[in-house]
Length: 509
Ligand code: SF4
Image 1 (cartoon, rainbow, N blue to C red):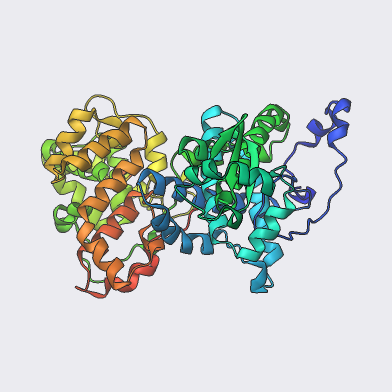
Image 2: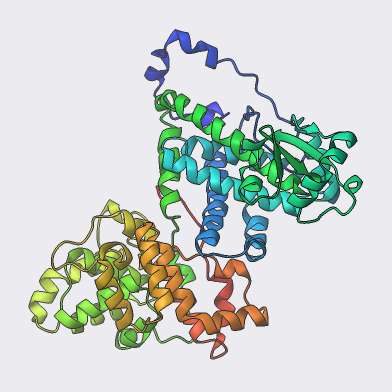
């Protein structure tokens, strides 16, 4: 499904393909017609798309899935999740109802269809990824099913030709007391509800919550529980399909166009990656200077607060810590001269001569003021995202880089959080649980939400910030910027900057 002109396959490798695999080489390329808004993703896509679309569509879907997963980890209720996800879905994965008459229907549905299959390839490799993918895709399907236009939804369910056996009126009357008991007394008149019979294993949620009558291995499901049945069917088909995909994956190794993209996508599922555009960091009216870093540090995420505290304690930081912190400071808008002043004054135990010989160059290099091709954009390196920090080498003795939520023991992490003013027992308990589940960036978001809870409530109540502006933080510089804006609400023109509070997700080269 990728256009050949974007192929990066080494021509020599093409000729060595096993002739027995020719059965996979003659697909019929065609555009599917999408009659329904919802999709069970049964038919794989076969039309051409470009590599750029392949990558971008997958990234957009991943952003939605990662945010859905974050909502569940943050214990948002279904209605809060729906509210939170609405603008994100509209931005990254819009899917209009057939009745909307939108001219983009086919394009939107194609993107939804293809992005699902691309991520299916990316997440089929391990059991853990398969389980998580199936869970979040099910959440997405459920959200869309509930929001679907009634007529669209009915037509979609009918198109699935699910083998649910309709319970006839005689049988319904025979089991009326049991059916009503399972429905908590509803319906009052058994004739008012339709029932389907399905194997009880297909509706585990309903069985577990005792919402269905069971007889002879069959569950009698009332029509109003259609959602549970359709969702259970979606999950079971997806799980089977993921198993099949995982077995087919080794063949993809031959394709060196796709394998790096797919690997990057699956890595991205651990912590969504984000790049930070330093041009979007300006905070008008903010005093971003060497002398003000101590004050600004109140808005830093824990990784940077830890670096700042270590620097103040030792008047020194080791190499990786300096790099992580310098790039962060650059990202908050500290210019090169001020950054040099900051480091020079912070390394108070050494002479000017030592500073100039051993440290000045590295700071200038990080800003792109000096350096060779690794400094490819001329602006130096980009500030590190959480993903980069969380996948880089852990700090050794005497080092302070990394992420405290990952690198500190629970006791040390709790102590550090208490030192920076996070003393609430529930929050500390939640952080501990997040850490145990290796959801480090969610622990960080939990602390952010706690520290800024009054301001967040205010902007939500006033309607001045949309939920897209409050989506899960995945970059230390976003953390700072959002924190600064919230703590300075109404004080200066920074609110105009709120539009830029979230940078676009971008794949690294
Ligand atoms: Fe820093 Fe990200 Fe860790 Fe938060 S999750 S402390 S921003 S690396």
